[in-house]
Length: 158
Image (cartoon, rainbow, N blue to C red; front, side, top):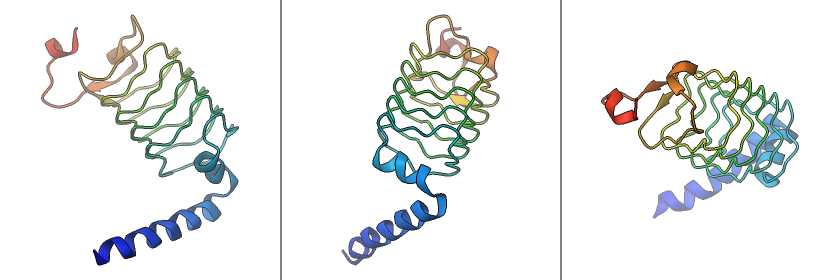
């Protein structure tokens, strides 16, 4: 019980600190996520799990190490974005533009990339599972992605 009383105010303080530390782009991402204009924003290690960033312009943004678990990134412009080491587990990226983006070492388990534009995307060492959904005809291993440990090629429809 005492933990709840402390945790909530502490979370608010941390979010306020991050808003000032990271500046306007972070505040825009959290407060006006849907359709936000965050081109070339620096959102390194940003805690955006569950955020609605659908239709946001994140072209060229630095989201390395960002926590985007279960985020809504449908139709977002992530062209040329840096998502190295980002956690996209369970994220919805249907229709997103990921051309020339770097998702090196990203967590891609349970993410939905159906109908996303993924030309020249770098998925080197990105980890995916059998529930990760890809655009028709897209070969994640050709882009450098690796199946999570314990999942054989037969389980991945190869």
